[in-house]
Length: 296
Image (cartoon, rainbow, N blue to C red; front, top):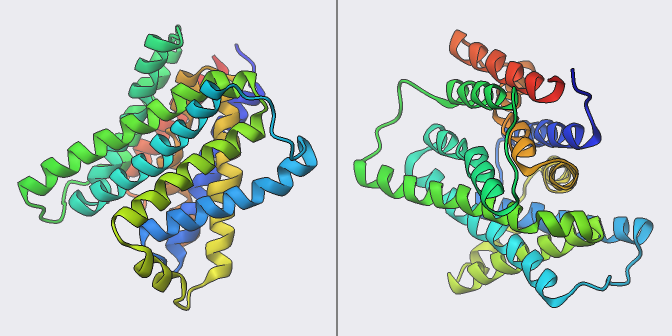
């Protein structure tokens, strides 16, 4: 019987806090468009990390080598700006349920890249734990009756979705060694800056500055959006990267994958959404897989 360490705790807590943020976003009647919401939450996370840095590590930039600095910035650009933009494109093309299934590829991608570049591997009971989590997530996100989507949109959506999830995996695997060997909070901040820089670049190239400014000037439930963004871009992000810092990327990715199941459970408890036999079975399988990853 294994023991639950801080790395496992942070990885699972990241999934739960992200699920709480998503449920809070669902509670609002009017929200920012997805790109603007992503930009706001990441900018909030970046700003909140400044006083955190001041209290914990100080505001003097540590002595990063130029390659390490470039990798951290590129990780944020790929994992936040490119991946999020492609994922939102996939969401628009083929809907939430199909996108949720494609997003389940994150763990296999992270595990594959970790084996190839970090020398990691899953051991013993971790393999059936992965299978249970993946089966549970597929049951939770799969829908038998889907809205009509044309074939071309599905094909494009799959390409964007798979590319997005792969970029997320690349972004986290490439920065893992830096998270382990350099000041943690500074690495998180640099990575967020890279993501914001990438998003601003996309915004300028696509000539969306005026539309983004107009979206931010609309009357919106900013208190709720800010709290949800705090959970999603500050609490969840710190715990997400702390999990990858302290334990293998393979195990952390599997525990993070449980977020979809937590969203379904919290939506049932908080929002009163239906929880049928299929979703309930998916929840049970996911929790069983998580328990195996934590305890065996």
